[in-house]
Image (tube, rainbow over the protein chains, first blue to last red):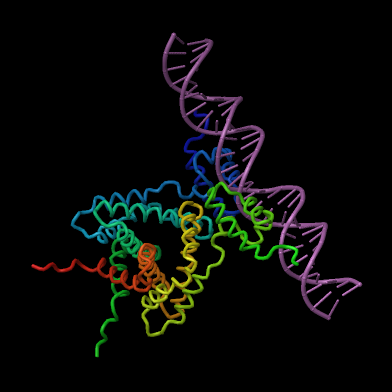
Amino acid sequence: MPRWESDAQGRLERAALELFETQGYERTSVAQIARTAGLTERSFYRYFPDKREVLFADNELEAHLVAQVEAADRSLRPIEALLTALGTADAIFRPRDFLLRRTKVIAANPALAERDLIKLADIADALARALERRGVEPGKARFIVDVAIAISRRATSRWLTEPDATLSELVAQAAAELCEVVAPPAPSVR
Amino acid sequence: MPRWESDAQGRLERAALELFETQGYERTSVAQIARTAGLTERSFYRYFPDKREVLFADNELEAHLVAQVEAADRSLRPIEALLTALGTADAIFRPRDFLLRRTKVIAANPALAERDLIKLADIADALARALERRGVEPGKARFIVDVAIAISRRATSRWLTEPDATLSELVAQAAAELCEVVAPPAPSVR
DNA sequence: CTGCGTGATGACAGCATCTGTTGTCATTGA
DNA sequence: TCAATGACAACAGATGCTGTCATCACGCAG
């Protein structure tokens, strides 16, 4: 029999989400999370560099997207490669209700929202670098990534309320919406 | 004669920027900033809610942009109103060297970069609300704002390296670049 | 069986951020 | 003249986060 329960990290993550939901992020201390998980405060910091990171531990999304972009056919234009990759992201958002609980907690706390933005910015950086490896000039790569992320946000936001549609369908739809937004006013029928 | 020097807030801001530049953000304590400005640590927190905010105190940019959007001709399409507003932002970046020093310090510190992202997100929220007041549906408003900000980032990044061009010119140029990025491949001459 | 190294954890001390509260002194205005 | 207000200091405390060392179980060598 092991001296300590296994999956200490998972226990910390679950305890943290639970406590953040019930009493709020600010009002739960690291010591409390650790106690709930059967560990000490010091051990918490062995698994996570800081309190916020307990909700952002594994960043498979970034790795997934970069891999997708790198695997994309070289004949695709950069924006196409990005949108195709972003359309497959739903594979990562697996336990849907867990994602929703987490999203709700993050949205309710400025400190966590801040960290969320950083993570998104990290993904954007990584994608821009992936594009540069495909020969896109740096400044332009970042621009294309920003546009693709805007499209992806639009699609994901719809996806949360309409779980029936495929994410990649919604991405295509948002891309079409972009053209409509930037295009000169449609000539009205006279 | 006043009992205390005037402009305590300004003194704190200048002292903080100076100290962050010379010894780094992490290695300067709030107490040190306050001492340098001739105040106590406790007084620092009367002017700024936290240590980071000393570099983000006044957000005239947000107010300026929202005002511009609200003043925009109602006949303009949303994206046009936004891009016009963003093209006038150079009026806010006045003491150019101060802006550069500040930008450098922020870029060098994750904690400050984080706060910077939040400020940008706040601006995006405010602009989306301004668009909604013009009758744009909320989700779409946020999408248009995200696209406009992507364009603005591209333009501003160029503007920092080519100070000769007008910001609004560069915004128009970036908007054209967007069309080129999302448009289907140009039919090659055969 | 005994001793030893290793890895995960606890225990403790310490610094920094940030907050609540209270006291002190000048300025203001009736 | 005097009460109210504003600007600040002084003090105490909670919490986030770090460094350091002791402890305990396990496996392995002898």
